[in-house]
Length: 484
Image 1 (cartoon, rainbow, N blue to C red):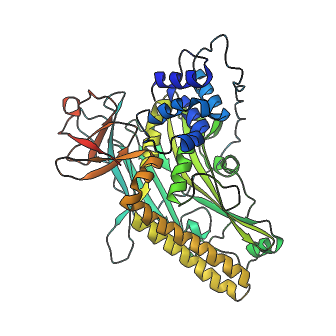
Image 2 (cartoon, one colour; image 1 turned 45 degrees about the vertical axis):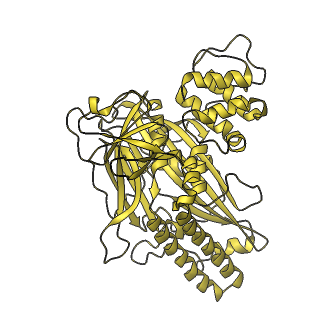
């Protein structure tokens, strides 16, 4: 989003112009405050190219107070306010308190490490100019059957010159919940050896506000575990529900190294919608139980080798609520966890890169079906065990089984062509076609132009005059955008 577009929206909704704004941070504020307005007023508008912004401007009289305040705050970030600002402007938000010292890191992935990226020759660059990004596909591989070779499990796009490692570790999660039977961990490292993107394994726990159900959850004879009979055989934790910020401060922050200080915490609607779509959930919480989704992005500061560093940490907390006895069972999952670390002062410049990589991370349909079927089988085994003790608990486990089977079916559904357009809108991606071969590729819609070379590398640009064949090594074919 360019600076002029931000000013146009701000003037339309608050009539108090400002001189300049920090685009990356302002865009995050706008998305957080106007996400619901965009869903309501601009549901049929294709994201990208400033179209959502233009739509909101057209509906300026119908914008919510929350969106108007977000627009005013976005326009004022980094600028000098006019002498007569809008009286509806919210007061500046306070900086969150510093976090306590952390301690340890997450467990490493152990199975099927992906191959590292090859280095490029002279003249090749990850970023060709301020508006161009060169990417490649990275894959995490897995053996779905002992008799088979490794097959793709997770795919994503990362900068072309970055090194990549990753893997899927059976029973490698930090908890023993059934859903944590498969632990995914990956890292993409920049050419400077300091800038890094990391995928963090999921985390889960359970709780019930019904005394009898809580007693069952903590009963040693009934406790569920991840089925690892050769290793730790960890149990699923039982603890009260948390929101995303509480989860990060109480569970994640103490595992980060080195010591980090929380600078800010903001909603992350892009990641929330991505997780909702991937799990077959509605665009917003209904307020009547079921699933609740809370997505945030945390900015942190720390020192590494006596040099100041910054880091973004994104997380989504999905809380599934099931009626049981006289209360509810809460099944909580921290998912979509990803971190980007960079030297201080360079983090904002990587805001678009963070979102490009985040939106490209995709489990393959086969991996999703495989893991959800495996997890469902654990619940079926648990249901059989519970049947001899308590029919109500067995019915609950069977209901949870159906939830995971539904998620697996939804993953296949969204991979069908009929649902691809809605899926791409949510994930901020679009389809490009190579006119020389007819092949199609799914890339970020934050850039309007894309090229592909013979080494499965991509260059994306928002500059219509940019030509990689005159600036980069190799032969590049321009890809054509495919209408949804």
